[in-house]
Amino acid sequence: MAEPAAKIAEKPVEKEILLSINNIEVVYDEVILVLRGISLDVPKGELITLLGPNGAGKSTTLKAISGLLKTEDGKVTRGSITYKGESIANSDPDLIVRKGIFQVMEGRRIIEDMTVIENLRLGAFTRKDRGVKDDIEKVFHYFPRLKERTGLSGYLSGGEQQMLAIGRAIMAKPEMILLDEPSMGLSPLLVKEVFEIIRSINKEQGITMLLVEQNANMALHSADYGYVMESGKVVLDGTGQELLDNEDMKEFYLAGGDKERKSFKNLKSYKRRKRWM
Figure 1 (cartoon, rainbow, N blue to C red):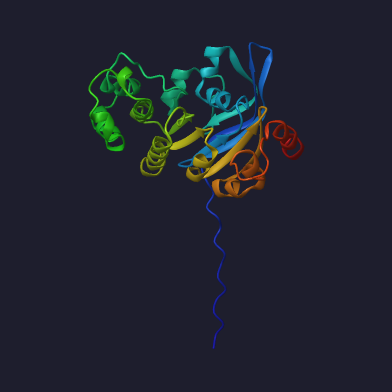
Figure 2 (tube, rainbow, N blue to C red):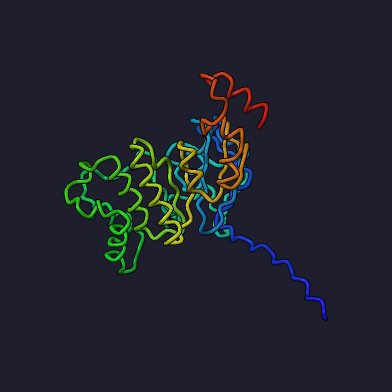
């Protein structure tokens, strides 16, 4: 009897990298060094999260991508940022939006004296197609609560304003959305709801997402891959599950370390430097 043919091992599918950051440094006011050689990749269609303490450089990383550093006298002084193989470092924000990247800023930044519909139409300002009305209905599919709100956006709750900010990003028909602290100021129930919707948009619409978030546990349960930043550098990375299982992550960010320890305030900085830096 003939021996069965040996199975040929399948080659892993190579991911298409939509955005690549390679060894960038960012300086504010020509003297303040914030990012110190950060590198990361964002594959097309995936949800990637950036984690780390306040001041680590997470929001600066998003602004370096979206071109918003210029509004704060910041500049990429070394390294490269490429989107679909094209350099975008230090490009103007409106050009970045037209290329397909839209940033949802920390604090929502909606126009409070405009209605929900007007805010959504504002998100589509770079578009020339006639599908705006259909996409407004698409936003209402993900955020049905917004359809009920007909007054000025300034009267929306914090959660509704966050929903509107994300909806406005969808209206730009981006290939990639940068989200800066979407859970800030929201109740735990709303945080869970917003993250479920973010994940649905990512999977159903195929929109690539780069997420900055303080709620590490929620972010890692949603993310395909994560990077941990400290002092302007990436010190740890891995899949969402790998980081959830990592002992250092449990101790420093997921409240799963030594239960008898009352405070990590003084210990964290030293131990992280020793282990990671």
